[in-house]
Amino acid sequence: MFKNLKPVIAIDGTAGSGKGTLARKIAQILNFDHLDTGKLYRYLAHLELKENKKILDIIKYKNKINFSEINNLDLRTEKISSSASIIAKKREVRDFLTKFQRNFSSFPPSGNGSVIDGRDIGSVIIPNAEVKFYIDANLEVRSKRRLKEIESPEKNDVLSYNEIYKQILSRDIRDKGRSESPLKKTKNSILIDTSFLSPEEVVTRALGEIKKVF
Ligand code: C5P
Image 1 (cartoon, rainbow, N blue to C red):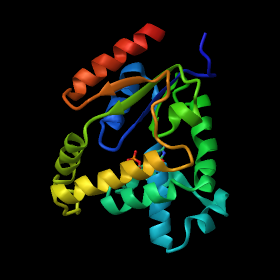
Image 2: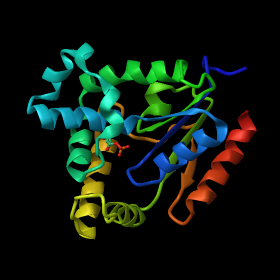
Image 3: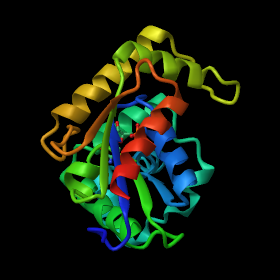
């Protein structure tokens, strides 16, 4: 028997740790739905920049926010990353997104289950998720991965390794140090340090843990 209406795999971790890649792959393998909750925060940051209004004024009219364009936008710029982690400190913003995330976990489109990645999934959003992971890697490795990602021709960010390193470090400090739902490993989350593992090795390790539960 599952603890949730539909089984949930919660994946939390630091920026650039590989949690998103892991979540996507696991969802594909299990035929579950993947929710990248970072995208929700990034979308709100995008709206704030686009509409030039404070986020609290935007979410006042909550029912007017339509997430349908979320997959058609480039939300992975460093500007949006930083703004997302600033607005993510606000309780009102987190409360607004909580319902959406819990609803996704109870009614995943496939009807099978969900893999949800973020910062507070195993600690606050779905604390009784069937399997909980905490994914991390050292800061140097995470900065190099991010640099490689933005060096791809379709991205417009031109940043040096040092700038990326500093931005990820500031984001770590904000995400772990905030009073509202800080990023932290819960007691019953499984830690995977991806610093010296390939994406395939991370998936194999995670699937091994999932098989123990399912
Ligand atoms: O995961 P990603 O790097 O896309 O998230 C962008 C920012 O959104 C994070 O740095 C974090 O501040 C915030 N976030 C959060 N809680 C989540 C997902 C993302 O606070 N569940």
